[in-house]
Image 1 (tube, rainbow, N blue to C red):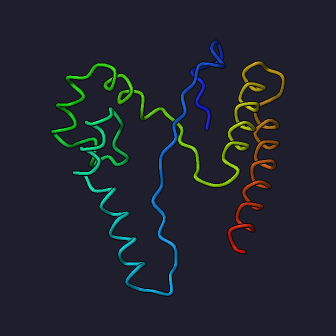
Image 2: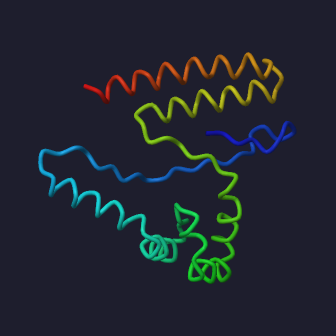
Image 3: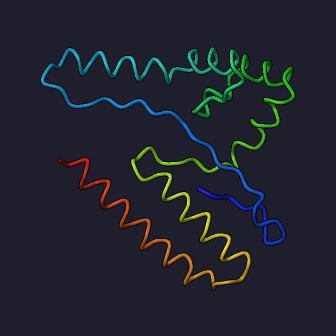
Amino acid sequence: MLFPRGPNKPTNYNWGTLYSSIVFKSTSADKQRASLQAALAVLADASQLAHASSDSGLPVTKTGSDQEGYKKFVAQDPPTKAFADMFPYCGVDQTIPSQGEMRQIMDATMLKIYSQQEGIKNALLGAEREVQALHDADLAQMKK
């Protein structure tokens, strides 16, 4: 997703991508339970702190970023602090098959708006139709 800084700088924006943990339905309750425990372990505050402080990543939850250990790490690492300060203003892609196409549609739409090639309402309605069609196709594919 696109977050322009303003009409004078339409190409200056941030976006981010997060990794997802997915637990699929399984005929084995034990396998499903083990998958859920693994996903929850990755999201645990301690795991987020270890990941963030080892490769300058960012925690994916507010409780992760509120940890004292993370705050100390960020205070000592100016580049990571710069990213951490921008994180609340960063859009995050959905983890679905058409996410790249959807991002391109939104990028083009926002550029049309900021360059005044198209009005806000019409541009967003057009983007909504295009993105919704892709989303519906993704959902249909997932149900198969």
